[in-house]
Image (cartoon, rainbow over all chains, first blue to last red; front, side):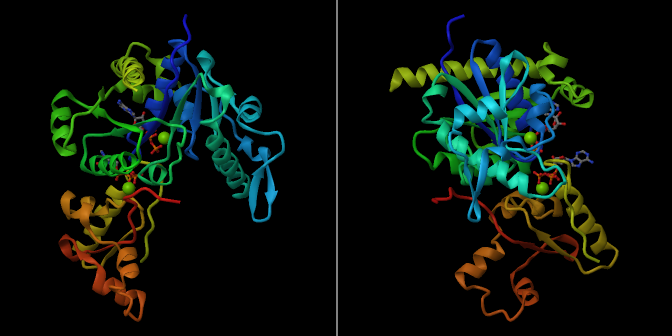
Length: 262
Length: 103
Ligand SMILES: Nc1ncnc2c1ncn2[C@@H]1O[C@H](COP(=O)(O)OP(=O)(O)OP(=O)(O)O)[C@@H](O)[C@H]1O
Ligand SMILES: Nc1ncnc2c1ncn2[C@@H]1O[C@H](COP(=O)(O)OP(=O)(O)OP(=O)(O)O)[C@@H](O)[C@H]1O
Ligand SMILES: [Mg+2]
Ligand SMILES: [Mg+2]
């Protein structure tokens, strides 16, 4: 397969909108289409690990990449994005690499803060890292507008804002989209999740704009969640997984269109 | 009594908080509903409505603009600053993130 043109995507939205499910399934689907994929778990919750089907890791591993520097942490000598991924990323099926900012373990906050600090420093260098120029990056962000406001995905050229057909989710998505659209050179696309066909129309009216893609409410996703298995492994031919595969193809086309225009 | 509601994203924290606040108010309690999420949506679950919820001023804004700075106490600030929700619940929104952080 010819190497695919790399995508740089951040997934944001209200709590529980389906960010991790969509980011993880997208990452797997992109890998199957020939992308080298680095998934970035930017939420201190293990959602992305589950949706990718990556091995659970109990340690905030990246904490080892930094050393104290006064009251802060700095990356140890010789550790940049390449080393960090080599040493601390896990490998999910289809060859997706997952770099996670770490989940609180209940053994005190220090390793988690060290890990988050290391993660922040690594992703800031990712956009300019030659070694990752041909990699597709997919970031799963924490809930709400804060990760967009402080830009927890500096590498992203496309923000996917996941929205459910409810007012709380719609107001949140609008707020996130306003923030990401206030920065030049980024594309912001809305993705409806868990809507029926009739619910989609109503929700687009609430949003005040058309969505880029819609992923239906799908019992198979809930079953996969209960079984602790990635949706793409549990129900590869379910409506939600199919819709995400179509979303991924549409993103590839949009990215080529942007290239041609610029 | 003082109740804090916490949990994973989207599990129903706001829905449960809003409904607890309303039902306590209905059984005679004076209720202060404090929205401490920087994406404040408690107004919707309390029945304030989406448009109003989206535009509610926040305590942080009021303090920064000096609107409530003369209040001698937090209680006073809440008194002057809160919004009335149905059943007499008093809603106070602490802060809201709605623009890109320049730093
Ligand atoms: N299309 C769908 N159909 C049915 N259930 C779904 C769908 N998408 C997601 N879900 C379910 O919704 C819940 C939330 O999904 P997920 O954890 O991916 O959301 P999130 O936005 O990452 O949440 P958080 O804010 O906590 O990180 C999960 O139980 C998931 O299985
Ligand atoms: N018992 C329930 N039955 C059905 N739907 C529910 C129930 N509780 C909550 N919901 C729905 O789940 C969604 C998420 O609820 P809510 O916004 O209250 O969660 P939250 O934990 O406050 O989310 P966030 O992490 O984004 O603040 C809403 O659409 C809400 O209507
Ligand atoms: Mg998540
Ligand atoms: Mg909430």
